[in-house]
Amino acid sequence: MRKQVGNHKRLLICLAVTFALLIPLCSALAAEAFDFGTLFRPGYDSQVYSAYKVTVEREAVAPITATVVVIHNDTDTGVELHRDTDTVAPGPYGPYGPMTFPGYEPGTLDAGSDPVSGDISAGETKTIIFEYTPLVVYTITYWPNGATGLGSTDTGYAGSTYTIKSTGEANVGSREYYGFDGWNTKADGLGSNYLVGEPITLTKDLDLYAKWVPRI
Image 1 (cartoon, rainbow, N blue to C red):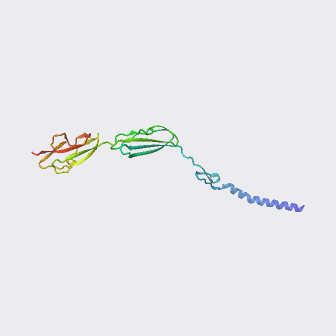
Image 2 (tube, one colour):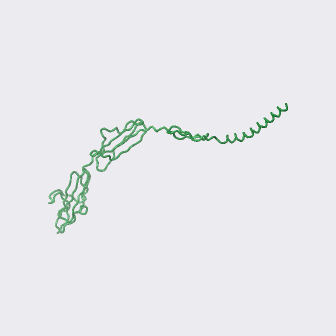
Image 3 (cartoon, rainbow, N blue to C red):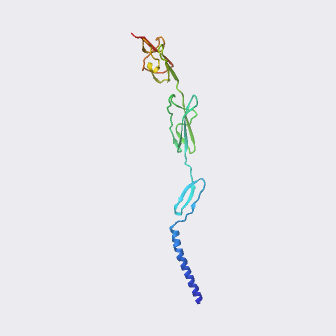
């Protein structure tokens, strides 16, 4: 009987020591969460669950979008003048319009183009094409007509306003004993007269001869 009591006392002492050691350990574990590290899966982005110090990967979902491509072309050469690519939300899109390019007529919508406005679905691409016709270029030639200069040429677009140049701008020089009296479309002065600084609308190539009159 005494032997059993002794064994019980020793068991109780062992249990007490064990509990005394476990209580601080459990407190420490309770104070700091477990760190499970990072769980990685290709094709997933990162999401952290801080309560357990674990990083897992959740599926990355691509945004639902559509695309509108606007192209501006030279009708004569097919050269692309400009391009815009817009990422848009599904639903209504546009309207898109032509741009302004120096040396070209206003743009027009190509017959095979998608409409400039309407509805577009997720993942769909609309292609809008504008065509631009190059303006006709006219040449203006300035002739010295007996003066010391070499003369010059200039250009302008059809339908544009052009300003007639001076003798200095036109590089026709001067003529001894003569004074400059404007420009004429004929070397003998029997054509149409033009004055320096006069604005004209270009409708054709133009030859301008310096008019010289004797000094008195």
